[in-house]
Image (cartoon, rainbow over all chains, first blue to last red; front, side):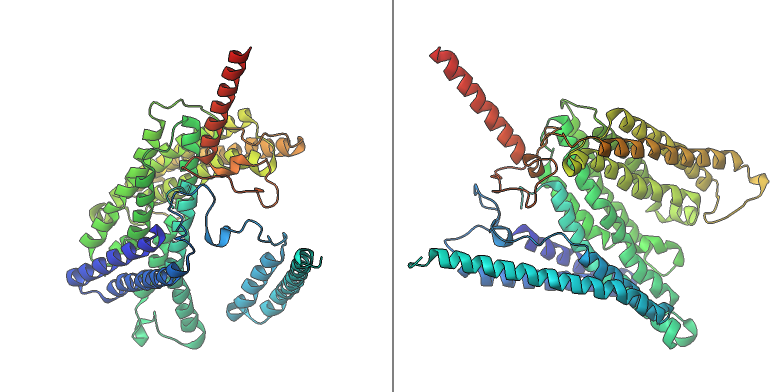
Length: 154
Length: 361
């Protein structure tokens, strides 16, 4: 089992044990609920990750490594394909995050914040979507070119 | 996983802590918002609410937040010290498990901020708070052991790490003192707590942060920061930190409360407060050499080599600054120090080639 999965299991056991001990020491509700809640949350994360790992195991080709095995190459999984495209640099995610934060502040400080926040939010979102579309078009064009080059008639 | 650099480990553990700590303060703020704008009564005793619940939910986030801030900086120190000690990191696995233990324990110690509310179990949270000193101590011990009998190079990043050991350990020891309820009751809301927090959090993050900036600046920009200006920067901060916060410990022990604008002359606190103020000015002045170093570095052409320090981790295998996508092919990672391994292999090949040449001639 990979260390990152065991990590959640250990946290869960620790927090559940601490929660139980705390309850019998103090009979104090808030602290007990927080400790046990942390234990349950990490336990759920552990079970989900372990389930995902078990489901993935039969599909792993030729007993592919989980990252701990001694391989000479880099890691498997999302970083295994070195030819994967990298998005171009952009300030759009920053603009969206900033805009969203300002819009949410409207709940506390008044509706003007929606107008102020909407400008960077919309500008960033439009820029981001356009860039993503452009990159997807370029990628599909490159894939199409690659397929055409490799076809028997080519 | 056990070939990941410590910095990457600490970022991973920090990310997990964020996942579990932030929902608590989000819920807390949502409840406060409902109380203030929609007449809710979560924290209002007249409606059956409990103001201490605010503290519980805030500190359930607030204490792990301290580790969310500091753990990545521990990772930086764990990267810098082995490079300038010319040794592998001592007890790598112990450091990984200490990081995980800190994460787990940090979620169970929040109520030591609430000892004086009278609504939490003092022995339980005192023991839990004292326990967290163990994995933290492992880190300090392992960094010191990494330097032990190493071939030390006192470059600016290394000097920042040494400064951190002094500043953070001082803060850590006073933290152990505050974990004891009898001392905490005396020191609650005094300058002692202010000094402790700044030693741990500001000392820990800023000293390690500057170590990281000086260490990775050549990689990020292709330009090296001036060593002489960097040394002045470190010296000013070590002296400034001592001048600012050691008097605050004494003031706190004498009972000076925090968050006050003035105090009676009869208390005799003026001299120590003046020393503390001078220390803060030294800290501020200490930033000038750093800003000058950055300005001068950025005006020079980018001529830093790929690996100016003899580094261990992967970033030193690519150019400074790295190209888009970092590597054409990912270098082999057979140990914790892939670039060190490659350097040793290249050196062995060069010697072999020289021996062949000498044998052939």
